[in-house]
Length: 484
Image 1 (cartoon, rainbow, N blue to C red):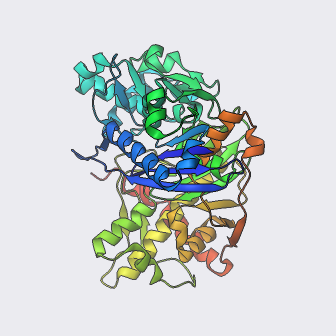
Image 2 (cartoon, rainbow, N blue to C red):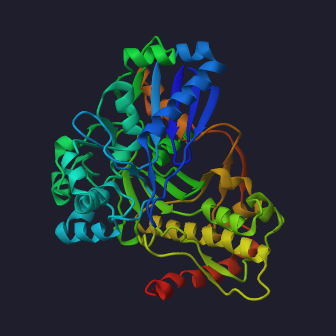
Image 3 (cartoon, one colour):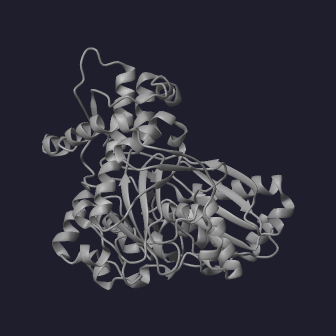
């Protein structure tokens, strides 16, 4: 048996799989985000630990024998969070999360002081990344900065609590802005540029490596007498790619969740910093990936649902299933800033073309279109970085909307494959990495692809109208970005 734990922003999820990768049990425990000031987003690391224990307790209640047979554990985690520990291993302050925007000024400082940063990391510095957050702490909380002995990403703090190991994997570490992504090693140049040292970083592992075993005490508490090994694991998107089998060059996934991700696996390091493409290490050895990232995907429709006091599924269902063309209203869905292709944490969303006649259906349609257009910009940016994307496997909560899938397929001009029922998310990918760490099996053997239930094709009759609307959409950012 193998356990996968996925440390997301809103919950911790757990899944147990057997040797044939059949799901034996699942569980989850909720998390809350603290927003003490505008643009801030934080969590207490202790809450992750409590949620992890709650998940294991639930799994143990469901399947005590399966839990007792766990031989490997793998973790998936929300990326970029800055968990700061002192020399005794004590947490110094709440963790600043991936969507925390306070360190946007520090990004400019990094590029000013280290012109080679983009070449080393393959990315532009963004406020969500870890390194700018540490510069912010140095400026605004110097007493805390002086005490920092280790900086850990969220899942890696749990690893420390589980095993006592200060470790991280390549895919998650690539999102810190301290990694030389091509070399898969910490960059002394990038560390120096942010007043950090190599000894403050965790040891680096591949996602499929064993990083240690859980402690004797935890083995007793969790009912795991075999003291399972803990795999390197991965960042959430790389782990989800492992779960869905997107581990070979050209494999591509579209994740329609709270945020939106277009993920393409690469055999080599393939950056495109000019359009804010993320070029990171994959969670499997000697493999990289590109990502186009949208910060507000289903978050956009959830915003409208709160505003109209109507559940999101009801809003989207009102549009029906037939797609004839785009909304007459355009939305730039930058509710929390945007990554690809603009890399702007301060920009905010804008509706264009609203009139007295604009009702809930028009606004809903505009939201679905806007997110689809944002994905199209990511697709164009990925292709500009050398990626070949001819079809996408679509996952995430937003894929329950038939009309949204049709809009996205039409805007992108490529088919969307929907996997058959089953867990292919980060927790499942984590469990697969736990299996590989425990057995030494190859990712090329373990990471098979799921069966495809159906494919959503572009609506050819609507493509011309959507293409025209997309070109209007691409003009919005440049027109509004300097309006304060």
